[in-house]
Length: 247
Image (cartoon, rainbow, N blue to C red; front, top):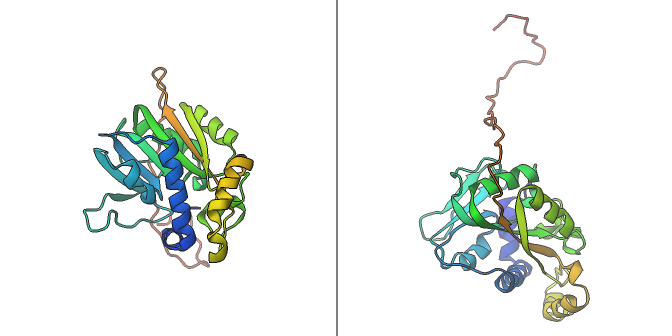
């Protein structure tokens, strides 16, 4: 089950959320290079970091899962947001160069199917950047942040998923080396804790940042997809039993 869009926006509007956004942004700037003239897709709740990653992009889109909800973005401009099913993206093959996935993999009903769909829409040698809660970190253990919801991952689990989906791993990094403080007093100490955490316990960071690349080895058989069935509700009294052949 996805984290609700209202809860996500509320968290990132708070002091603790703004700090987490900033620290993840700094880690992205250190670990992930932004290229010019790329087609960039943000999936999940990637909007806080899309502007930096897509600053020189040819086109930037924000896809948000139907289970999460969506809101118009960017503010004051024509919306580039779409509400989508994660296993059936409304894009042709090889449509984007980079996908930034945040608050999504840990909530995916079928991570393998989701990654297979991302592989389809990525251009050859395209990049997939995943930000996901670390199973070893403190952030996955506290539900007052969005990183405490869904299924956290270890490095090995994410790498195995990506390799099974025909991605090669370029880089695995971390962010949020300080505890998930709630009180403003402790938030003022985040810099000291983060510096200490980077040196003493980097493996226990709050989130993993994985950069992977689409591998194209050979023509792969494509499994036929069943269209998503939408059922129309039919109301009938519980005591009424329909006989065979009765309409």
